[in-house]
Length: 145
Image 1 (cartoon, rainbow, N blue to C red):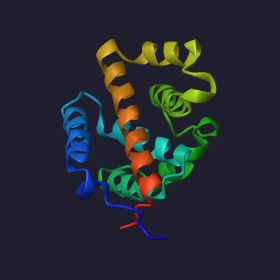
Image 2 (image 1 turned 90 degrees about the horizontal axis):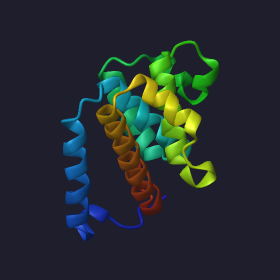
Image 3 (image 1 turned 180 degrees about the vertical axis):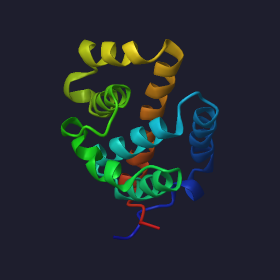
Image 4 (image 1 turned 45 degrees about the vertical axis):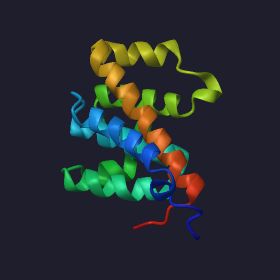
């Protein structure tokens, strides 16, 4: 697979804006674990090999276990994820697949039961940002590093 175009070179201002969102997220209250779960799960749903590769490496570097990463795509059947993480993963999937059924009241309420409004807003932004990165990587066929 040959990369179609290099977005960062052709549209550097677009990349600068995306990195502005990343800077916002790095200063957010989201835990590193939650950021990694959001990035990896959304990337799995979107089938973005570039982002799955990058974010699983980052997660492992930050202490995430191999077993949890292996089971992330089947988190509903696993006992390895806390109720808080399960709420975050459900929200991640529904925001990522928003065109199918939106974000259900049940999923939103489950997340709201675990997180305050600021944390929830930051989680939604993290989900939106990784979905944007997935779409850039997939549409330009970014090669694995």
